[in-house]
Image 1: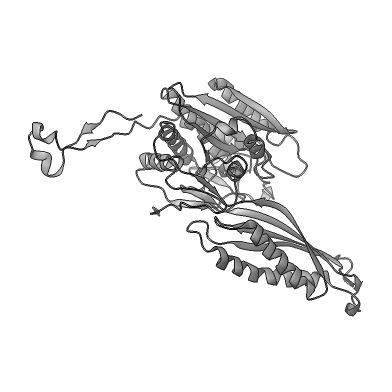
Image 2: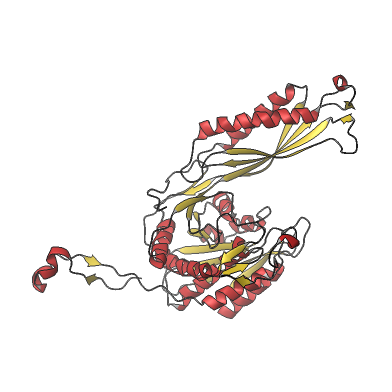
Length: 448
């Protein structure tokens, strides 16, 4: 997908006659132009999606349905064959397959989601959370960055690629459900026959211009602490589960230090963290009762190279020992377990994205890591798909009040997606492997 090589005289050969210079000059490959993107339409789609309140709330039905209907109509207008699969009631995946018409080639997937977290207290926002207002060059609203701008950018990036002419292979455009919950959409797609045909996935989550080649893993733990109730005036007759919870919290801080020593510091993902998030015991209306039961919730974040089974067992033993100091037993439930994932910097999915960013922006991107998990984690874990995360919006703005995305970024990312697809689908770049858990292939030479 490049123009024919041209000969460029430079340096000491600039004055050499044409006949002599042609034997020594080095051919230079000129990149194909960046496909034009319908910026106004991409911004309008982002606004239309933000205006839909697609909050992933417990017990909610038809969460993504309005957004799925909107996307499906757009795909129909584009003439893109697509399927709408209801993963759960009111929770559809919308997946289109865009054939390049340029012969056989790889299959590239762009992936995003349209569910969002709650806006919280709308009165605390300076704008309507679902107004999609554009002010000061920013598009404001819940989901603007996480990640309705990414969905719009990937759709119009693929549209730009298609309108620029035939390309080899094909592109899958996946708008999946429930990313903010149990990632049911990613799990359903990973189990589909189409997933087995995908060669790489760009997850369009907001990462502030970073090419994220790794994502931290996540383990959610719930400890049940069982002691014995007693009167507050007679503590010697009880076994205080709340005190045991405090002991376990303190002990987990030491367990985190052990994990950091054990698994080290990843150049982008940092270190393992063990964070107590919930400690519930007793009754505020019964302050004279020693609680016999407590629940402790813990959020664990891991890095590539972490042995999850080993870490969970270490945390279990730590909790059991700390609770036993006050005569309380500790049981453990693993609520969720998502591995840390990583892709090699030399994988063609990454090299194509880096080349595209450089062509659009004039500089190489920085490498980074996703602080949490994305649908890409599930697609790698369950289907073995190589994934990289790169999308519009600030890296730390997700889930905050006054969420926004810079308007210019929507079209910028769409252009990068179009060029990256052209690179990847043309077969450029060395093949490599995706790593889940242990991982390898840290990017070398960060740009920032």
